[in-house]
Image 1 (cartoon, rainbow, N blue to C red):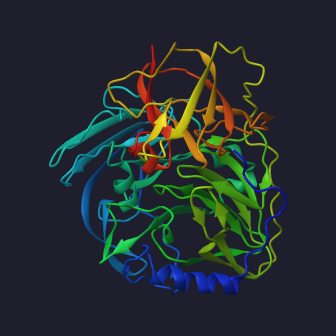
Image 2 (cartoon, helix red, strand yellow):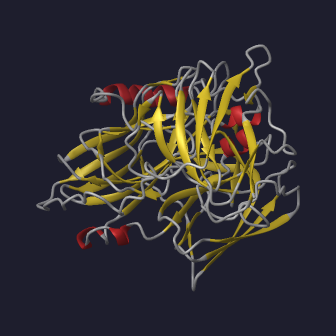
Amino acid sequence: MPLTESGRPPRIDRRQFILLVGVGAATAATGCQSAPVSVMAERYPEPEQIVSKNGVLSAAVTVTRQPVDIGGQQIVGTVYNGSFVGPTLRLRPGERLELAVTNNLPEMTNIHFHGMHVSPSGVSDNVFIMIHQGQTQNYVVEVPQNHPSGTFWYHTHAHPYTEKQVFGGLAALLIVDGLTDKLPPELRGIEERTVVLKDFQAVNGAILTENIDSNAPTTRTVNGAINPSLEIEAGETQLWRLANIGADIYYQVQLDGHPFHVLAVDGNPVWRVDSKDSIVMPPGTRFDVLVQGGEPGDHILGTLAYDQQGDQYPEAPLATLTVVPSPRTPAAIPAQVVAPYDLSTTKVDNSRTITFAKDQATGHFMVDGRMYDEARIDQQVKLGAVEDWTIKNQDKQQHPFHIHVNDFQVMSINGVPYDAVSFQDTVNVPAFGETVIRIPFRDFTGKFVYHCHILNHADKGMMANVEVV
C-alpha cells in the first residue's frame, strides 16, 4: 500500500485549517442541521486503558446507545462503556484476553479483534457469534507467544449493522506491547500517544444510523476530541499510534514540518524504517511511528485532501502540536525494528483471483459477482499453505481489501513490484486496478471473512468467507 503520494505534498496552510474547523463544526451531514461542535482546541485526551495482570487481561464492555461527550458536546452515539472512544486493551504476546461483552442495543452486535493472528473459532475471534439484546458473550482469546507487537483494534462485525455501529462509536484500540522493547535503549522509555481517528455526522443531537453518506461533510476527531492540543520538546522522540478506526473514510495524515518514521504497519514491526512526509490511511489501517520535536512553535497534524475516486475528502485539521524549546539532541532513528521475514522467494502453493465490483443498477457491492452469504464457503485453503491472491477491482473507486486472522505481504500493485517493509492486514486496491498479495495460512483452522473495509460496502455485499482446513 503506498504510504505517500509521489513527491512531497504541499504543506498545509494553517489559516485554511482554521477555516475548515469552522466549516466542519457548522455542518456534519449534507442537507441537515448538525449538532453544534466545539471549534476551540481541547487538551489532548487519552482513552481509558485496561492492562493485563499476571498474564491475563480481564475486561468487560457494555454496548449502549446513549449521549456521550464529543468535542465538549453531548451527542448520542453507539458506544462501549459510555465513551465515543472505548477503552484501550493492552496485553503482551503469550497472554490471554477475557472480554465480556453485554449488548443493550435493540439489534444484535458482536466483536472482531482486527489484525490479530488468533483463532477464528469457538469464543475467540469468531465473527459468526451474534450477541442479541440483553445478552452477554464471554470471549476468550489466546494470543500466541510469537504474536507481532503493535497497534490493533476491536470493533463490531455484526453483518449487516457493522457500518452504523462502528460509525456510532463501536471501535477502540487493542495494543500488543513489546514494540519499544525492540528499539535502541535510548528509545525504550519514550512517551506514547494514541491517535485514534474517527469521524461523525450528527443530526438533531445524534450520530446518524441510517443513510450514512461517506461523501458528506463530516467532523474529524482524535481520541474523541476536536482539534486537541499536545506538546513535545524540541529534540524529544515520541511514539505515536496512528489508527483509522472509522467506518468508511480515508485519511492522508501529515504533521507540518515533521516526518513520520514508521516502526510498524497494521501491528507488524518493519524490517526497514522509512520516513514519510504523509501517510495514506484507508479505513482499518494503523501505523506506529516515531515523531521528533522540530522547530519550536505550533504545528498542525492534519489530513490532506484525498481523492478516493468515489468520495472526495477535503483537507482538515486533526490536532495542534506545540514544540517547546529544549536543548535536547534528537535520538538516532533505527534502520530496522525486526529481521526481515520477506516471502518473496517462498514457494507458492496456490494462486487465486478475487474480484471486487459494484452493480451500478442496484447499488450492491460484490465479490466474484456474488453478494455475501454467511452459509457459503467461497474459498477453501489448506493449513500451512502459502497462496498468492490477485485482488482485482472492477469499480471506478478504490477499495481497501482486508482479511481476518492471517496478515499478508503485498507483492505488486498494478503490475509494479511492491517494496514491502512488513506484513499488513489491509491494502488499498486501485480503481480499475489490481493488487497481488502473498498470504501464509498458518497456525489456525476455521472459517473467517475477507472484505472491503469501507464498511458500507461490506454491509452491502462486498464480503466473502474463507475456510482453512
